[in-house]
Amino acid sequence: MNFNATLIGQSIFFILFVVFCMKVVWPPIMHALSQRKQNIADGLAAGERGKQDLELAAKRASETLREAKQQVTEIIAQGDKRGVEIVEEAKAQAKIEADRLIAGAKAEMEQEVHRVREELRQRVAELAVQGAEKILRREVDAKTHAALLATISQEL
Image 1 (cartoon, one colour):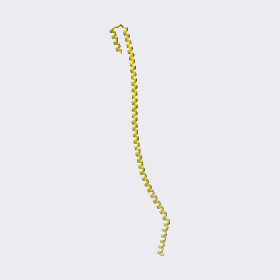
Image 2 (cartoon, one colour):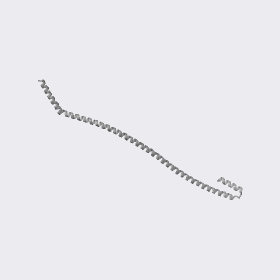
Image 3 (cartoon, one colour):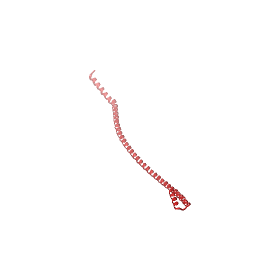
C-alpha cells in the first residue's frame, strides 16, 4: 500500500464527508441554532417588555394609591363638614324647642297668675261682704269699725 494513495483516498473521502455534512447535516444544525438564537432573542425581548410592563404597573399602582388617598381625604373632610352641619342643625332645633318650651311655660305662668288674681278678687269680695255684714250688724261705732277693718286687713 502506497502511503500517497492512502493519503489521497483519505483526503477525497474527507472532502466528500465534509461536502455530505455541509449538504445534509449542517443545514438542520444551522436551522436549529438560528431557531435557538431567535428563541433567546424573543425571550430577552419578552423580559424587557415584562420589565417595562412592571415599571408601568408600579407607576399606575402608585398613581391609583395617590388618588385613593386623595379621595379618602376628601371623604373625611366631607364627613367632618357634615358632622358640623348636623351639630349646628341639632343646636338650632334645640334652640327652637327651648324657645317653644319657654313660651309655653310663660303662657302657663300667665294663666296661673290670672287664676290666682281671680281667686284673690273673689276672696277679697267675700271678705268685704263679710266685713260689711259684721259692720252693719253691730252698732255704728268708730272704735268697733276700726277694729273690724284691722281684722279684715289682717285676713287679706
